[in-house]
Length: 100
Image (cartoon, rainbow, N blue to C red):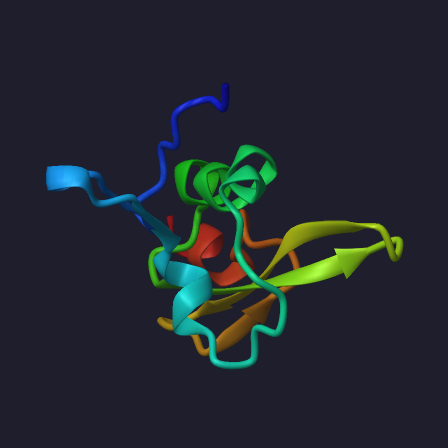
């Protein structure tokens, strides 16, 4: 049994027999070539990034990519929209930290 998903981008609908589960962050990215599966949420970095980030204007994009030719994983691209800065570490924005 998989653990519960605590992510604002995860969507599930089981009302009246429906069985719909999706990641709206990955679904929004048109360049995603691999299919999303519920098991990817267990190791997804997005909830941790959203909890621990110092960035005030964080914008994320996510894509499912093949890792080591065997496994699928979620890869994240982050931008600080306040300073128009690509973030190498999505948990830290040097300019937002400097303002605090």
